[in-house]
Length: 254
Length: 254
Image (cartoon, rainbow over all chains, first blue to last red; front, side, top):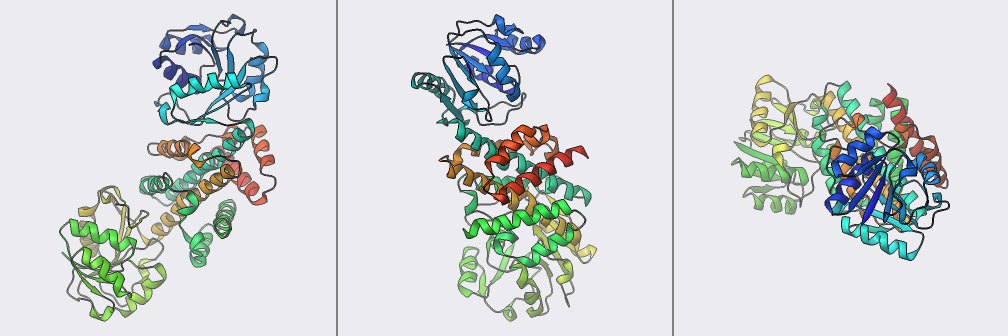
């Protein structure tokens, strides 16, 4: 299996490492910034390039792992390729491929940071391809990396991405709101960390709606009013408090 | 150390078990429902009672672990006690104690379920008492149970409770919203579980504002508009999406 990586960021880096470990041969790493390409290429013994025209046209798989808004222009500037061309974006449709024969999507549903190792075996890989043959090819590669390979079409992938914004980005913002409330009152965020950990542990084996707790689900209006009174100087936080409490109540009445 | 437990729910049960393991002698377990009192009392070799007048007046410590709205009437109906009387509520002020000589608060900042064991050593115990002597007494007991003992006054405790609603109850509701979005589109919540786990793992060693990701913090208006268009049939979800996105943007501009 010969592979070319287009991109040198977090996603490209983690794919490079796991593919290299799995004895795939990574021929090249492309980045418009040659220094970045070299940094990753050296690690996995590949060639660094900064011009898409120099891409090896004989690879089996080309993985585009660049910022969402760059995918289109990367595709437009590629030479004709023999192998399968995939992107790794959650928010980009498979329709982004124009004038390409074999294409697909290999979307890793995880948040990456360069320094922290990722366990690919448990990482959901969401795949899609333009033909059944290409799908089987992509499925085989994916299953060699992860035990969690799922067929997910572009419409579903958009939903996944949206759901992840709620479950991860917005959740993190709620943590930030809590951290602020504590800091302003001379309390350390450490106090909340065990509770947060346990709350998340609960949904590892339950659906979240089954383990909802707190004043809103209890219908404890007295506590909710006390909380709103405490937030009175912050209109935006009050609105979030109200919206979320109403949401909890309605969700569980349906 | 002789202890009486007033209550037989989750909090009472976990205190009973950890105190019993630490060689404290639990004399009695009170519940208005004798069957419930007996169930817990049997486990730790204590007497079950359903009448507050029968409480042993010679214990060192009395722990009230009943529903918030029952604390006041429990206190009013207790005989005169020799030992230290504490409640375990996050949302109840120390001022709830009337006509009591020695009192305090022993608030475990964790979510309990009866069947799952709790690691008390890492569990933050927030304590407060009416005198320095009582505080020292409560601190000594608390430190024998946990490595995370914090002096937290009633005002701070209310803030902690409010912060926990944001960080845990509201967070869980965001998980429920995500689970719904997935289910409606034929996708399993399992797909999101690894990402949720990793998102929470990130804040174990960072402040949440340092690790915020997603379209709002990137200022990726195109993706946010796509998401809002996908939510158009659900006005409430759209409002939550907007509020949280604005919150993320403002929070990180300050």
